[in-house]
Length: 71
Image 1 (cartoon, rainbow, N blue to C red):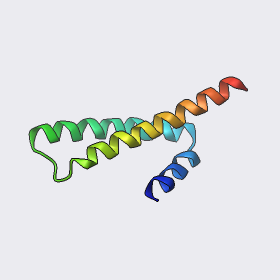
Image 2: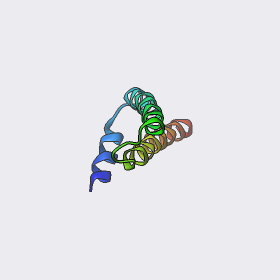
Image 3: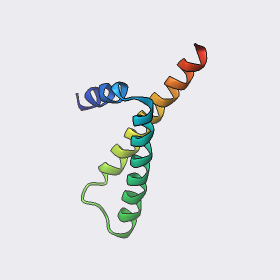
Image 4: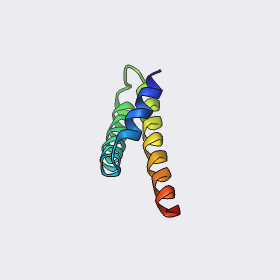
């Protein structure tokens, strides 16, 4: 259920907001990976979840680019 709520939130965002969230998430993901290499995180699942969230954002941005190109 968490994923469906997250997907609805992503679809409701504007393209500019998506790009902002994407850049912030990529930066956060990079920091998480670096911190995990130095000192393991309590829950490494967070890294996987962040990576999947980034993929969802990129997928939505790409879908919007394709739909704009068709119109």
